[in-house]
Length: 325
Image 1 (cartoon, rainbow, N blue to C red):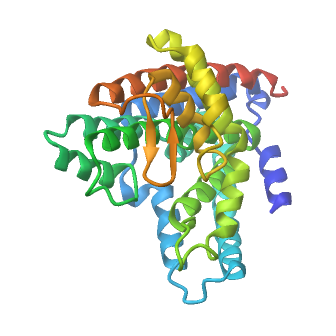
Image 2: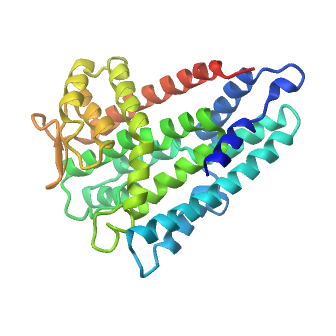
């Protein structure tokens, strides 16, 4: 697997070999095209969506009766090998296209592996729900897997804010970071690992051992992106008319209170920026001294997350400058 990733990184299209166009220019254009495609076009149809294909494999693999740690690790590695093979083949195909079609192909292949517009729309569906039962349904349908039928309004809006903060890292920042680090195979592997954790990584009797390997890999891959996301939210709090100092303080104090080593990073920063309590019953409470969030707080969270997303994309384009010619 390591050899495939190293080869894949070397195989990222060297547009510098075509008409004098630098690879620095190529990286900037690919990220920007994919970002604009997300903003204006959104997600491709489900039948063409690679994350849906990944989910189909993971759902089928979860049906094995033997749900040991070894079985889970073996099935995870088998799926990872398939993802790397397909993404490496797609990258090689895109590389062989002439300029500028190779950059367009790379952007088209990259776009389904991250999602910002879909996340915003999902949160907006909860905000626009006409009543609490409808808001609970929208939350359960779009954002969380837990039972929402008994959640209060504050818990519904809090869970929405938590999802916006956490998925800013999982669905945008981490994928683009991994693309810059290793091209399409690495970002596809990340999306596979993140989806596997979402589908297998539960502490239930039937999945705790089976999903342990998937959960540990996802924890490792998200260690840096989650902390970068927290810092981006803090850095953009003032621009969104929120409290950056309070965001820093709550982040430093509460980031480790969640069972996940990464989820609490952006969530605690968001709790501090908003000055609102984010909690999951009998599991964690972030910003315990604050009041529960309201519908308006979801919109405030989306605003600071949007600032952070745009800041990150701008910085990601600048990061591409280190790429060799």
